[in-house]
Length: 443
Image (cartoon, rainbow, N blue to C red):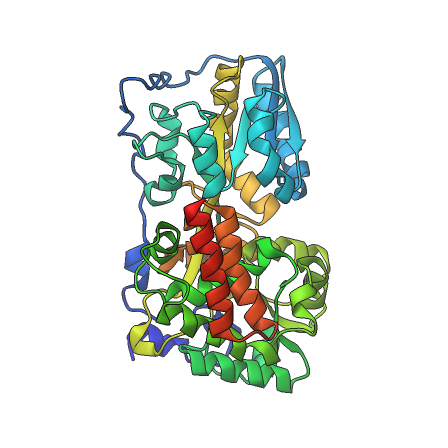
């Protein structure tokens, strides 16, 4: 047992919070210090030159800021008020769409100029599609981009190394858990292997609570558990991309193993889980009827608003034996900030993104919304952000589900997991998913 594993044995919640360290190299591997994210701004000759760094002159104009975080509107309103005060004559209208709608319609709306002088993008398929459509102004020369952690900023670069967007949020796409319920169930340590995780679920079930609340009826959040389930099972860190590229199959042994482990979770999720969405599960978790909510850190703030008073931490199911653990959790750098290359108000939009990137402004956003950020210099004062701050330096894997750029293909793969948890045979589910993958690859 490594020193950090030794610390995982706990009797008190403070130790519980720090118990998810399974690898001696975890902290060092994930420590990304500040440094320039610029460079690589020279693409093919046909590409537009990156605009010069935004200066200190005040700007004016009426801007549209397109995003999907309705729950952040009030916090952004305060930030925008500060921006407008610093730049008299400037307004910023928030054009907010629900996340599912934003996924499907934002590209066309922003491209058409209806919204989004400044805008956001999901990491993965949406960012790739928006980059191909030429939506992003090249931010490679902007000095404020240097405030972003280089490791996290990679998700905003294109294949030519241009910094097209700046991932703003650092979220942990892994279950959150009720520390009090874990303690009452007699859990003596955070599980460090699959058998331990199943035993924990049994202990929690024995206390009369739902061990794992899982929104199987809401694909966008049902797939969050997928990240943790494959992170140590997959043969390499690009296995999801390999499935899409035809270099790996859903019917490969490692994925069948993953599906069989999904089947083992059937007794521990809520009744009719494959038809449940995250909203009622947030209530279930907030009222202490479920011990884990299998979505992510982005649901800590909503469950607080629902009245959750207990300490909350993060846990990723470890699906392998202790000696095969590579990662202890999942992170994602998303909410990628961009400036519309077709906007006639680029200077003001750049200034707004620069403003959002200031540590003091970013701190207000982080603590007001309950989100960790990818910027250096951010001070976390929110109790939940402070409690989960150690995860910023643990060895977590960039969420693999976002390696899929074909959303239909991703849906087929993730749906295999949902069907298995709903009762389908793992091999049959894998074969059905692979047929869809093959069809998508031929189309």
